[in-house]
Amino acid sequence: MAIPATERWTAFRDEPPEGDVLNPHPRALPVTDARSRPMNQQSLLGLAGFVQLHRIHYLSYARARLLDETASQAAVDATISVVAGRWSELLRNARPAADAWQQLRAQIQAVSRDADGPDPAVGRLYCALPQDTADTALLRWRLSMTPEAIADLMGIDIPTVTASLLTARRQFSDTALRQLEHHASQQ
Image (cartoon, rainbow, N blue to C red; front, side, top):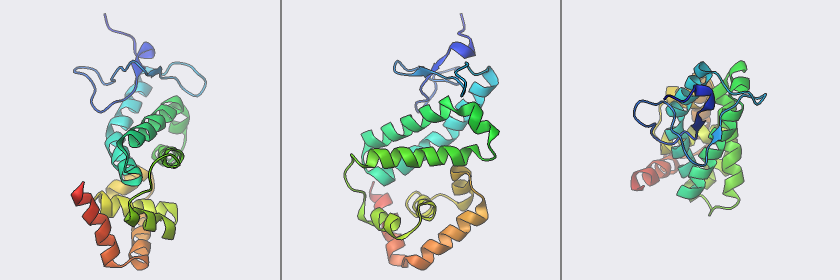
């Protein structure tokens, strides 16, 4: 007997089980909207698609920022939990991906207080640049993402990404940017 979508429990791990878009997990919470009502199946599918599209990139970003697998997983899981709990509200905003990205950054900042220091190249990036600019540079040079993919992930437009990358190029030498790329190839 199939479990109705409004009663499914989700945690959105790496891969959903065969034939199901949601991955049940024992520690998961039921997915509800901002008013604590279960989401309809269409909303659940939208959330599942959003998580499937972004989770791997969120995790790569968290790993690059934190250099700790457990802390990275915790930050991404907490982000997805918050996004799931506010999904209906996020969909009413112009850029749900931007709101989710802000949540991810907040979770990483909360976790990073307990984690070891970041990679020195990453640390210099975040000390010298505004956070949005540093994020775009990290995604571009450490994670080798295209400007289009960065824009989609962060929920911003491509000209903003391009301007941020130009700012990073002006601020950092080619050698410093290559250090970001070099570390990625060692992982």
